[in-house]
Length: 456
Ligand SMILES: C[S@@+](CC[C@H](N)C(=O)[O-])C[C@H]1O[C@@H](n2cnc3c(N)ncnc32)[C@H](O)[C@@H]1O
Image (cartoon, rainbow, N blue to C red; front, side, top):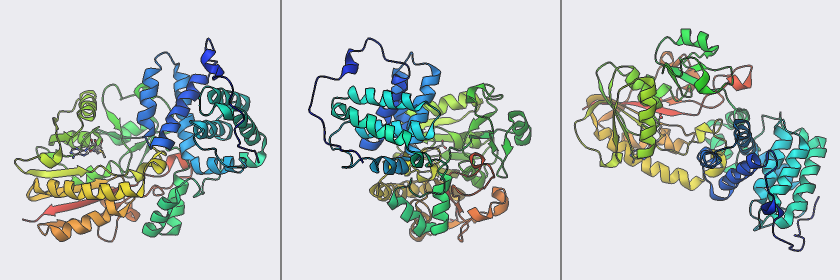
């Protein structure tokens, strides 16, 4: 156990006077800044990293990858890393210590989870503490705590204990246990322990592309890539034959079953994974999104894929006009179903966010329903594991909107994944579904989708 009393304040941080940063420091600094944003401001990790890395124009690709790897591993195993550090901090973490927690967590993540030399992880963490005015008094503490982590074989036993709930905030874990049972909650937490392989959706010829990409053709029709190569280098990317999309995220459009020539509105469309599926099925698509920046990404994606859609930057709540044959509402949500791919979500979301999002989703759903023609279809979906954003949303919608009825999903439509169909015939995928002997190749994002029909 180490004492966390700050030593007396001394001179200004030394790092500011260095003529040049030592190798690897900038990558660690970016990882720590991104992690501090997650821990202190609940900022999304990927966006923060994108922003920081865009500013570091001359940073080599290897260091960019390292910054991402450190911050992501730290978020994925934050609960366990915090416990490991707490066991070595006699008085807990000092308050008002700037980026100290992020520095310690990033340092421990490097030692415990990544293939970097311990001395580099420790020394560079100490330098980052010295460069942070508030963490500066604790530089010696950083050195001592991280050395203890590095030298202690029991701390090193941490990785490889995937079935742990320790890396899930308690409130989330309890919610999943209440919704899906204790065994499923444990399996969901275990599925989050491993970074999953990338899935792609193809325009056509899934089995030929699976072979060309050396991927696994999933029963749902998506391809799971075995290789870890930069996406733009893979065959078919430049020619627009496929796009990256989690296998579960590809299911809502399969449920909508778009037909050639149908007028379909994709109401929360960007960055366009589902829009591309609709357009590839030759539907006439209106892609709506409130965010012009995200819609610009959607347009760029459609250009690469050679797909044509109409786009509209607008708040869906203000939308009006001729009703559509079919409507897809992929509503903004807490995204707790995507923790495998975005482990920061577990730490940036609060229970109050779920309540606020559920209120917004109900309004969006009412509006989406008003845009469906009689006899038309509506698919509502979210990438959340929280029933308020899924099952309960549809339950209350149907009670207040008798013009709609559920159209049950069948296992045959989703590659025989019968365990992903609820008693009401809705889709509910869990991260522990679709098991595979190799953990990287197992699992799905947690998605909810309901298919509704407007009866009159
Ligand atoms: C879950 S994401 C959509 C992902 C997208 N469907 C896909 O498959 O790539 C939700 C989107 O809803 C948009 N959004 C949120 N509120 C909205 C509103 N009131 N009107 C229109 N778009 C909205 C967000 O900008 C965000 O792009």
